[in-house]
Length: 126
Image (cartoon, rainbow, N blue to C red; front, side, top):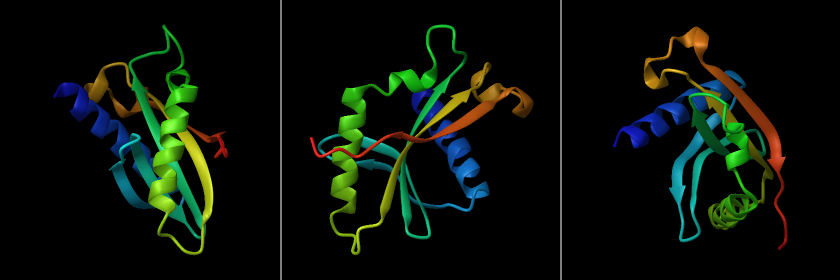
């Protein structure tokens, strides 16, 4: 339960960062038989599929490193399902948001580090 709350909190932080860049939240926690996409955002003709990774620190590895090739493929397949009924096909981008909050939800705002990695991976025809 706590992990789920922490994940939602991280997604809210990421969505807020995107809103500051002029994006609108189109969908959150979109599920398909292939997997889940944390955030789907739009700005003009661009649709961004964003995977949010929240960690206390980067001692073990950078949070973005947990978005493996297998995870990327699941996100891409899920994105294609979300896009299936959208006409015309929008411009698409896949981002990874890396958040470090040393004390989790109790972290002071000044201690929270958030980085958006735009075009972290690309839609492939595989």
